[in-house]
Length: 105
Image (cartoon, rainbow, N blue to C red; front, side):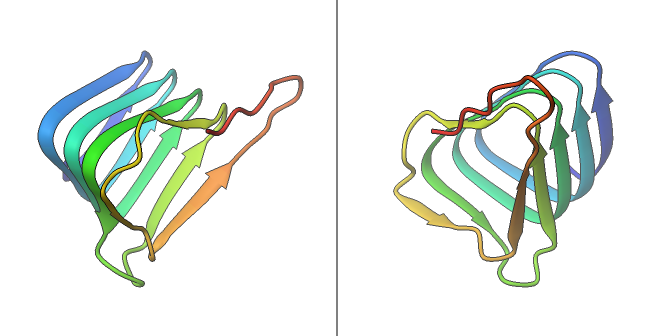
């Protein structure tokens, strides 16, 4: 993805490889990502509910200067541990709002 995308509902992404590059993604509901490989560079993803990642091979960014922000309001669920993973330039911002249980596993 390059560019901007805003959704008032859940977003489902299912592909062999997903490359988030130079973009902004704002999801009002949940974001489901299913892929063998996911890569980030210069990307901001804001998810107002749960981020569900099902990545089998690799999840990575482009290094220490990748400028990636993943902001999630109701937790992150990693369905499986990828074989490779390196998010050196990624900031995770987990926001716990009033009366919401934050589940991260």
